[in-house]
Length: 149
Image 1 (cartoon, rainbow, N blue to C red):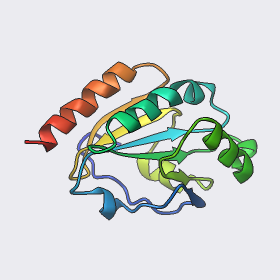
Image 2: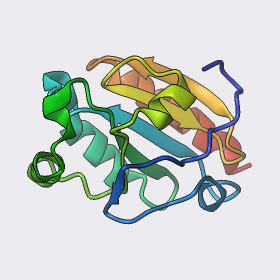
Image 3: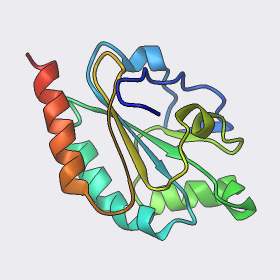
């Protein structure tokens, strides 16, 4: 997905956990962070406390959505997804993408992966991998700064 691309519709979920949201509910109000993760991804679990801290710190200024992207048959187990989400305090809405519909719409190949959209829903930053939370924070702050003008 190229920078400045519009956010894809959030459709095709196998299931939503912690509430469901639509693209139109996210646009116009505040920027959005969409992060892809998987229950079989060690780096995702390692980064989750930072993502949660981020979510809590910016709760009034930033939408945060999780997308569970399975990497194998074992990752399709809903009970396991719910258990890991609970263990790692993922309280934001979780789009369970067992059919890779959103993964394909984002052209995403990585977990963890982070997409930052501005309030109008245009992609402003993408990064993948477990490190670089400082860079992510810097990019989110830049987008937040623009939306507050």
